[in-house]
Length: 395
Image 1 (spheres, rainbow, N blue to C red):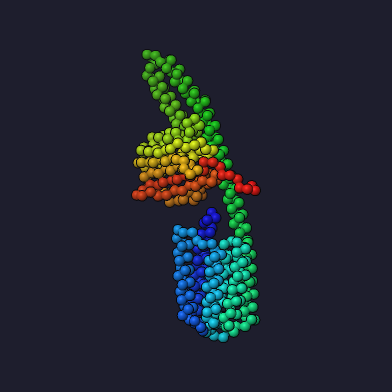
Image 2 (cartoon, rainbow, N blue to C red):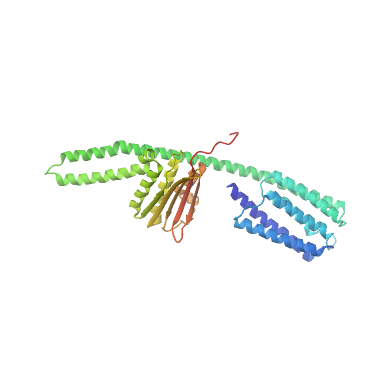
């Protein structure tokens, strides 16, 4: 979430920076500088290319952006150099050069970072840079006009700083609420898992045992006069026992506790293949015991259930491995592909399976992603830490 906010801030900053470029270009076209016009044009051209590159990088999002305060300092250097080189502009009396207005956009650029300190610092730097550049250029504007512009800039910066503080507090509040909601959903999922286990134990210890005892009684009571009816009852009980074993195995398989996660996922994949009518290939490596293996099993169960129900796949590949401190599970199919709605959006329509799985995985510090496959199908990847994260100092 924080990375996404930083990316959105960088994109907004890039658009405001393009506005600064536009102001400088209009300044050169309508009211050219009194001195060093060629140098000013070269400076604006280089700044425009640099701003265009930053905009492209921000919207593509494929490379890390420099620290925001460094970008803002460079903006100030360009504006100050422009003002110092120009020695004034051919503006009619009573009209302020557009370069002056560009200095007012620096606090606005800083405000997108939701850091009051950065906004306040860049406001002060903007005022100081304008003061030094304007007086050093010897434009003859006078201290009165310069002081008025500096005070106006400081006032705007103070407003931006206050808004930044409010925005930062809101972001923190939203983050706390989101974290709490994730914790609550994770606790609800844990409660569901406990209920599944209790139900599985009840089915195995009571109903399934009764069915098996009834089959044994039928074997003992089978005679020549009742063979056909008893055979029908025997087949029905066999089918009931098979179905109960399948339900028990999916709710909370004993193999997960006794033989480990790899065997449990193998059994789960084979059962899903029988129900869905597809071929399944399971690639697994030995994985160490983990306090989060029940989450990995629940993820495999949910993903395979979705393949059976929605994918219409003919081949499914399941990969389970432990590497670099992570438990990695991949379920890939050649079916219909990703649904139109993202997992988070499906919550609104009542389908919470994938959305709740995502939250549960992220609650323990893991990652969950869905990707399309070429030429068709979906690949779902779940990565979960093998061990809980160490608490931060001071927690």
